[in-house]
Length: 370
Image (cartoon, rainbow, N blue to C red; front, side, top):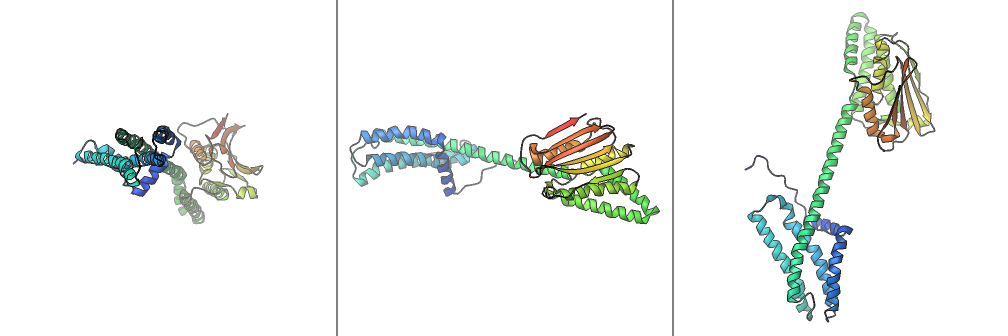
């Protein structure tokens, strides 16, 4: 036996397979060819036959052939199309052929005799042979076509599921970002404060604990209020100031308003920008003001502006913070959001524009203004 077993599609109930086949046959790309083939046969049956029941019989024969033939093929053959030529496949093929002949004989011979009908175009010996051939070939062609389409749809759905799973994994990785160097440095500073100033160490531990608790809660969420995101950013800035209260001056301009209360954002979407503002600003020797401002635009858009000392000089090699924010905004909002980075005199300004109500769209607009 092979070490890798062939994956067989799950068995489908007969009623479900029949309903699926009927739905597939009623699509225009199949229904029109069936009508093109059946209509001349029905017209010939009516015009070349004298019996008054010839027309209903012709309609019944064409309709049942078009329905039963592909259903029988799918039921007997298509679910095992990958097994190759085996005794089982040959037996099912024989059953399919016998069933097709039985259906044609029943409709073309037995029922007319029971009803006492006379000779008709479709019940003649030669016509019955042609009908059997049409049943076999038509069922094979339509059944295979329907089965291939069904398998393609199932494969596309699996691909979409995998894509959604990959996106969820990517978002989880992006949401869990917090600069490890900052954590290590903070823990080292807390260790020193424990020896020098127990009160400061306690406050720093509580602040760090609050940050980590918020981060862990955010990893499990797709959205949370902008106010909660701003609390996390402020806690981050304050923890930096615990280590050095002269590192920078924090300016916080966050007005209250109904528009802001309706804004939800992906958790920790602003955190990398806040980390960069300190890392490449005050922590890199550029002392001065770190300023965060929130403004509403026409009740439809909110702008988050974050400035730090130190002139912006373009993307840094190996930097991940900006690309992380860009990717997450794109996944969450599409073209409805934007991120702009630029230099203003000897300062760096990052502006994140968010819609009050998220709307899906195309690629994210990211502007890099020198």
